[in-house]
Amino acid sequence: MTSTAQAPGPATSPPGRRGRTTRGARPRKVAVALAAGVALIAGVVFALRHDDGGGKDAARATDPAALPPDAISATSRPPRPGSPATASGEFVTAKSSGAVIGEGSDPRRFKVMVEKGTGVDAKRAAAEISAILADKRGWTNDGKHSFQLVADGPSDFEVKIATPDTVDEICGAVGLDTHGEVNCDAGSQIMVNLKRWNTGSPEFSGPISGYRALIVNHEVGHRIGHGHESCPGKGKRAPVMMQQIYGLKGCVANEWPYSANGRYIEGPAVP
Image (cartoon, rainbow, N blue to C red; front, side, top):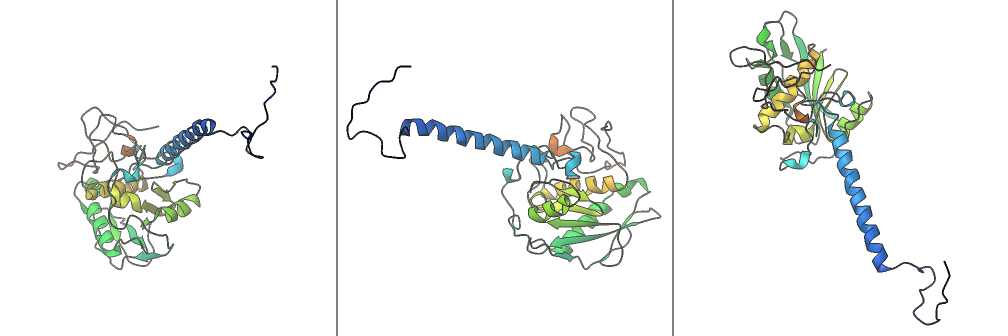
């Protein structure tokens, strides 16, 4: 290309700013903003793909409660009290014990623990979780399994409600990436993300108490040997072991492993 001489004059660009024009800057800013937006959406989708139905284990691509436990964002519903909280890393154990729930000969002992500063009352959470496990539509329906809430001593598992940062830390220690959004199953710990406990999932249209039942039943289901299941057919109830947060696939949201008449709500096993 042949260069053209430029007439001298006061219109020349100041030192250090030659070639930088307002017209050229705007497209670049828009492009950067769009790229950032795409990256953010991709990050949220990736994070939510690591929860499992109520939230099992992140790295094993569990349920949603992901964008896939939901393909959703925890901000899809108005936040409830206690959702925004600063991680303390300290837990309070519910100082309450209960009778054996169910008829199984070998009850699984569990504790309920809540991170300080979350605004969640440990005793109330323990009562709610115990009631879920005691429901006739729950896992004790088969007559083989039983559970017992304990305040101290040995336990088979702990249900811990914690802030996103603490969930990320504990789940990360066992190689699971929860991205501040989802729950996980870390060893003997069922880690429940405070966002999920307080705001539920966009894939679940029922009350928050119902979604909490889904979280508990899904995770406890894994503990007693159940794997993931898929939708059995359009219009049918989704199995509690389905990763409902990924989308219902034509099924209707459901938080219970058994129907009111004692029938197990199942679907095809997921390999």
